[in-house]
Length: 139
Image (cartoon, rainbow, N blue to C red; front, side, top):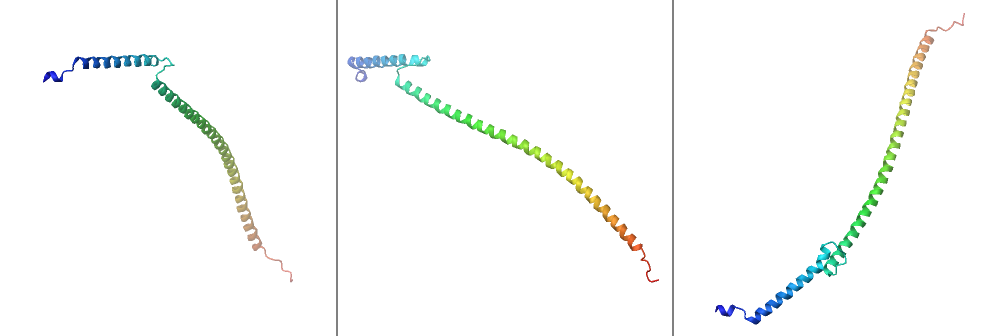
């Protein structure tokens, strides 16, 4: 029975021929791939060419995204710069308003003091008027 499982000479020759053909195909594929593996362009293998094409397309998309991000970053930088300038102008204006308010507070306090003095003078004048006795005109 062991003899029935053993291949005959013809089968062995067919197997050897297939193995030689596979080895030849592998050697050919290796020769095709070697230039690309070594970094040399222009290799003829279609799978590698397709992969290179996909990588190139991805590189283009990556470049477009990077360019778009750079443009967005530029616009953001311009907006931030304008905002910083506006904040600086607002800070200066707030400081001017604060100074004007302080100055006006001083004026209002002075007017309040003048009003208090005037009230006091009016009160004193009223007291003096009350103390005046009218002249007797009937004599």
